Image 1 (tube, helix red, strand yellow):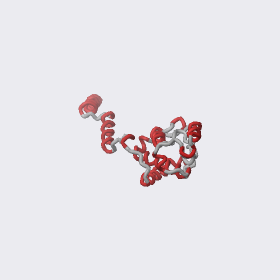
Image 2: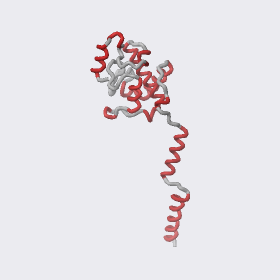
Image 3: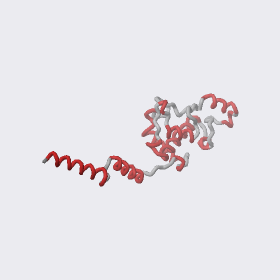
Image 4: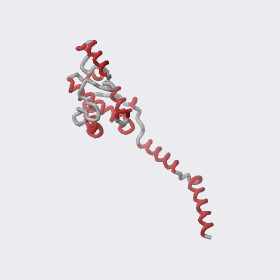
Length: 171
């Protein structure tokens, strides 16, 4: 009797669990993902405008000190990752290039994509901090960064030679 009761109970429970109550792992996962999407709405990178303000730079230092210093060192001089204090930028030195590099990462060189982890705001803050410290180290004005020049030294002074140097360095 107990054997048949167990079999009937198992069939009844399976039908109830998967079909009537819809308590499967898939539905539980979908419910959690929906709750997470509501609690933390995704912000597209294009929705956040890059700003090189003192507040953004300060917020960027906090992001950098939390996530980036491990590979790029606390003083931005590099280590596992490249230095941010020189003229040579492997993946580009414009704000758009830096944001793309942080967001997408460089998996072939060991840099994880930080976009899903940090979100657009924190990525913009980190980019503002890194670019501001680079400008400070090279002695260039901050407004040159927002103009989108690939030449961190200043193309007005160096002319075409400065543009050739940047092109040769692989930025």
